[in-house]
Length: 246
Image 1 (cartoon, one colour):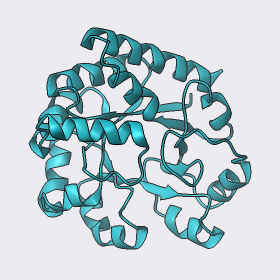
Image 2 (spheres, one colour; image 1 turned 90 degrees about the vertical axis):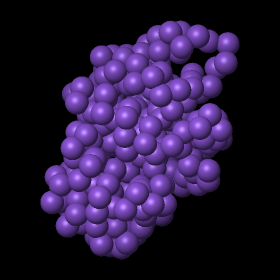
Image 3 (cartoon, one colour; image 1 turned 135 degrees about the vertical axis):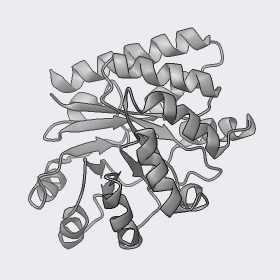
Image 4 (cartoon, one colour; image 1 turned 45 degrees about the horizontal axis):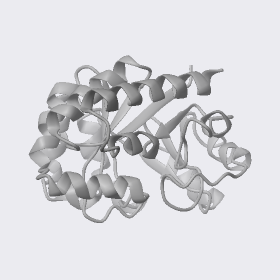
């Protein structure tokens, strides 16, 4: 069974909604949830996620809200924190990582933390049995891929193309996938540009998909009630899970 990872922006439109949505997604096919940490300059994210980030921050999102959401969600749905390094660094990593473990969070995804700099935190993550998700991109050399995936945990985040999330460019991922699988037994999940239309194609040869912009687009629909947003996201999760497994 191939896995579905869903990204949602924490605190948008509000904290309690994020909890309700997260639990609903967990009941409708999402295997792992990425709780996005709103950040003012989300460089790896497309316009939709950037818009949701800014909206959450303007509504008063604080890091403590992520902790409160995680306390309700992580015991019931496998939960990762996805955010930019400054957000975590300001919380003091040696305090934050043990706290994440206490809350039941299983790992972090930090797109702007280079592999070489992440190595400084390896012992901290391992001591708390948390994963620091590794990224590989099509621009990486084979030597680079071998180095990055050597100790990859939980899954390898395979960037489906060079660019930002949500733009849906298609390309042949088979050679890239093969070079990753040559050096690691860790599952490979495809992210960037994955939606209901592209999921079946993108997941070929991979072990799962990571979907963000398609869910956030629903969150940004101002004409929908909270209940309708949760229903639409749940339906999308079911469709995606079915697409990647049939």
